[in-house]
Length: 328
Image (cartoon, rainbow, N blue to C red; front, side, top):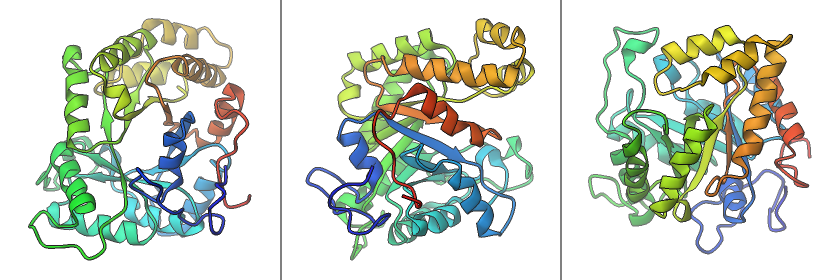
């Protein structure tokens, strides 16, 4: 969708009253639309065309694109680099920033630079441990964590100062987010942890993969009991599973991802397991749309990014609107 006061296609919008950023993503959420975001796989390359080609797969299907920051503690093109490239093309980017690799000085500098280049959304993450990636000998930083980094960036934006107290002449105009995992034990603590992130400054939440709809509904009900659905926009995470075998591997090896036996059984019994994974994802999005407090979905289609347009189209989750893209 293109807003009436958008000066040129793809440029940042004027900041409305009650908004923190000039970005389209915040506008879509505050307007009450069901938002769709997706993760772009960062290339192991310095070729910008690879980034543009991958982003083009999402054209007309998503409201914002997440650029991951060394996800899984593996090295790829940086999130700030990808956001710089795609923001210049007009894409609405969500820059993930991990505390694993940067101290407070680097993080604050990256956010200022990202905001200057047109990035309007920042997702704060504590980050995976280096032992899980392909550089286990790397020295982790963890000067901050998700909570303290949210507080720091909120202070930069709202108070116009660095964590040191030094003034910022032109503060970053950003919409702040965080991640949540409804399925990590202890389960009863998850809504309370979400409340802490909201208190620290999170305005939108993207969750880990949600394959167990009953557990998600229980989590969202508790979130509602705390009144958090009125304070933060929550986008449950979904994604197509490639096969029953890959689902088994994810269930055993990826912390906090719960895949019910019924999902694996459904995949195993399908003639085309990859297509069935897409069908399951579509079914889940349709269920999530009916959950109170769900403001959208975050689609993580690792190595299946080309299926996102199909998933969004078949759910008709966008209704009559078409998110902005460079070819409009």
